[in-house]
Length: 131
Image (cartoon, rainbow, N blue to C red; front, side, top):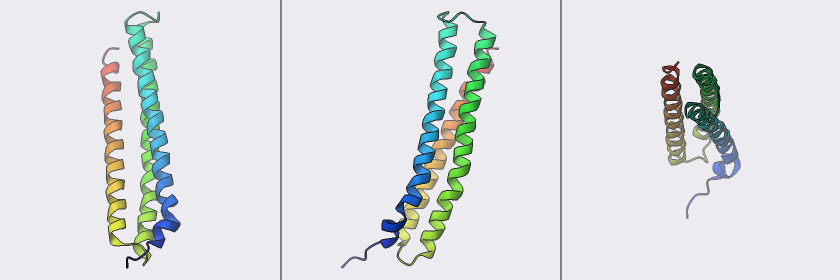
């Protein structure tokens, strides 16, 4: 007979809540990235009549906001998830396989968020170069 994992039944929301919050902030960051690129493009093709330098500054400013959202959300995500992982390690009802799965999930989320931040930085740099 298999052992019931009571830790996951009782504590799963503590792991998934920070993950959901990270996902929401990353969605906002991507939305800002899209808005900045669209605004800059519309100005570039003259759909919006504004000085290209002003459009670039506005787009880069939006990108900086999106990057800050992503960085701050990642900074908040890591300690919250580490706390759940530590709690799981201490609980006799939490199997080692679950601790390993949480570590892998955390690593993937941190890596993907970092890649997203890097892409946003590259786009901001490319737009900034046009000023």
